[in-house]
Image (cartoon, rainbow, N blue to C red):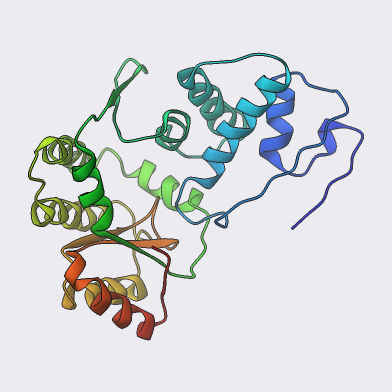
Length: 257
């Protein structure tokens, strides 16, 4: 943990806190306390969620209520345009809107949010098919995303394929008889494609963990966020969960869900 007691905004070391205060032109005496359930560089969108949450809290402090879309856009502006982080806006929108959504980023810079309304049993079935493991590997996403961005023209076919996968996954969720096998297969195919986007998205260690999970019944899986570390997320039938957990615990991973 770290405590900062300062008189000037410019002296704040935490870049998101500093720039959010600057952006909203808040120079009052103010106390900000933050608590996180996950570490940074985990691939779970922690910095984007923090930025969205802090902006929302600061707007409330000023007596204003703003829309989720505005929060997402302004948080993305702070991280991408002001802090020059080579990231996308998807985490900001996921944090600002919450729930299960199909998010489309359009060529004119607009964003379309489509809430996925389906049976509670379907969502529960999907949730219960997932297991997450901490790899214990922490990495800033910037270097991976820079390499990926530099290769995006060559990666166009892969990116289009991954975009189409999102629509296929949405269609499966709308099916009243959700097939975990079909869902997991798409996640597996997507991970194989994503690994080609940049050299450090995966590693021999991560590949070994994933192979162990597949041998024990995992249908699909992927590393969270940009890749390179963080959390390994697995899709499998519930009957295979314990086998997968035991095998990956033996390999050195810690199940988190």
